[in-house]
Length: 306
Image (cartoon, rainbow, N blue to C red; front, side, top):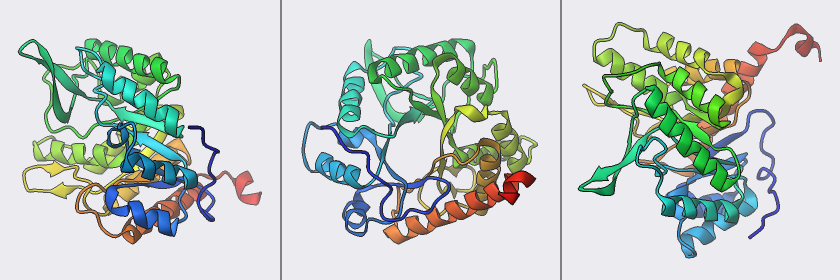
C-alpha cells in the first residue's frame, strides 16, 4: 500500500521534531485527539502479521503521522547471522508503512543452543572487539541491502560486561556508522543508566561528566534520532524500564546532546506502567522547550541578528 506523506498533525510546533512511542493503551486516544506531534514510533515486531487489527490501526496512524519503526529483534550483533524470516517480515512492513526511520539495537539475542539457533528474548551487549564489529557491520549491511535504505542503530543499556575489548563504545559505534553508512540512534537515558551502574560497581567517575564525554565522542553527522525515557534505581542496579518521566539529569544531557548534534528528531519512550496520553504529551512539550533553549545557546551572533 502506498501512502501520501502525512503532514505533522494539526499544528506541530516549529523546531525540533518530537514524537512519542505509540503503545496499545493509546491507540484510540491518539487517533481521536490527533495531538500535535512530528512523528510516532512503534515496535516493528508488533505489526508483523499480514493483517488484523494491529496492522489496521498502524495504517490509520500512518495517515496522520510519519511513523518510525523501532525493532527489538533483529539481533544485529549475533555471530550466527540474522533470522531470515524476521528480516523478511520487517521488509514487508517497511514496504507497507514507508516509515520515516527504521532502527534496532547494537546487541545480540540469537545464539546456538543444542545445535539450533535460539532467541534469548533480551537485548544482550556484544564485546567491543574488532571481531564483534565485523559481525555487526556484516549484519547491518545485510539489513540495509534488504530494506534498500540505511537504518539507525541504538546504543544499549547493558547490565553485564565482557572482559575483553579493543575499543570504547563510541569508537565502536562511530566505526560501525562509517563502514556501513548506517545512522546512530543515541538513547540518552541508556548512557546515563550505564554510567550510574558503573558508579555502583565502584568505578570512580562522575556520571554526568562521563555521559557528556560519551556524547562528545560521537560523530554528529551520524546521529539520526535521540531517545529519552525514565529509569528505576532498585538499590544495587539501575534499570532502563521506560516506566517513568525523564529525570532532570537526562534532560540536562539531552540539552548537551542537542548542542553537540543539532536539532535531531527526538522520541519520548514509555513502555511500562503506561500513564495517560497527556503525560507523554507533556514530556514531548518539555523536549521541545529544551531543544529551543539548546538552539538559542548555540546560535552565532549573526544568527541572533537574523
